[in-house]
Length: 131
Image (cartoon, rainbow, N blue to C red):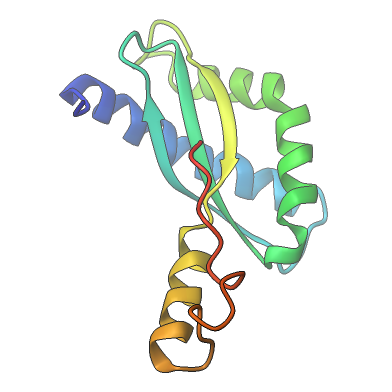
């Protein structure tokens, strides 16, 4: 089912503000050399839940940072509601996920170049998990 214009609009507003909130929190928290980008925000039809997909560089710290972000979800939601109070009546609940699409594309490129052969070693291209 395709997203409505309202869902897309709310998703883009949340995406822009989330980038500022998360990057600001990372730099204020003393995290140097870490890049957090919000690659996608999908809002449910009833506008009650926003699924936020994050790309975190470097990848080895992604799980640790995601756990920290999830534990601070109420604070992030409050900060977002302050920023968007003139645009949104109710702030959707936020659910954070890691966006592994760049890593998956990199694995496919390596296999196409012949560096890694998924036919000989089927564990190279593991199936993607739906989230």
